[in-house]
Every structure is written in C-alpha cells, then in structure tokens.
Amino acid sequence: MINPAVAERIHSEVSSNDVVLYMKGSPIFPQCGFSAQAVQILSMLGVNFKSIDVLVDPSLHQGIKDFSTWPTLPQLYVKGEFIGGSDIMREMVQSGDFQRMLVAKGVPFENRVVE
Image (cartoon, rainbow, N blue to C red; front, side):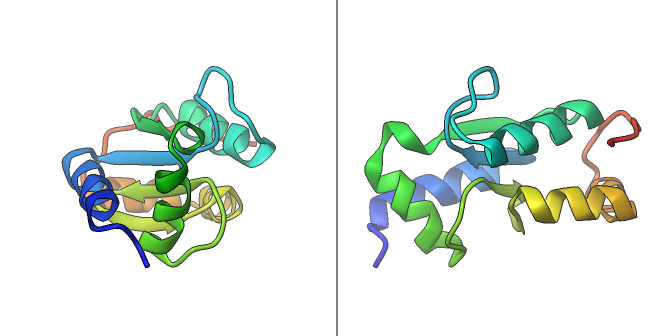
C-alpha cells in the first residue's frame, strides 16, 4: 500500500511537468543500465525532462512502483501518463510511436534518429 504523502508527491510531479523520469541515479550519473538507456533516448531526441532519483528516498523507490503498478525502474511519465520503462521507450522510438505521442501531447523535442 502506497503512503498517501508519497502518492501525492508523485502525482504532483507528474502533473506539473511535461516529462518525468523516475530513475536510479541522475542523468549525469545513472546507477543502472536501464536508467542510462532511458536518459540517452530522451537526450538524443532533445526532450526536456525532469529526473527524480529514487535511490535517495526508500519510500519513493517503492512508492513509484506501487503508484504505477509497474515493478521496475526507470519509469517514464509524459503529460501525466505512465509510458513504461527503457525497453518500451526504445521500442516506441524505433517504431516512431514515441515521437508521434510527443507531437500529439504537445511536448517539444528535436526530431533526431535514435539508434
């Protein structure tokens, strides 16, 4: 069961920022390969995003998993909608679905190719 204060904190972050990445570590110093891959995808596309390091707060580390009912990290939210982790991001970028979603949601980005 998620702590109501943690749930409110998460809800506030995903509601007030266009793109939020809950990750292990920071964009400059990711603490897992999947978080590094998510940062790389967003950076190569030129998406501005807010990163939140779940390792600094154990209640947030578990709370984000409970909030989304998704068991792994990183977790990406776009305009308040849970998208998924780095594997889903990579698949969406390769198919073009990620870029189309950003356009549909009005999130600015640079149209770069991600390999």
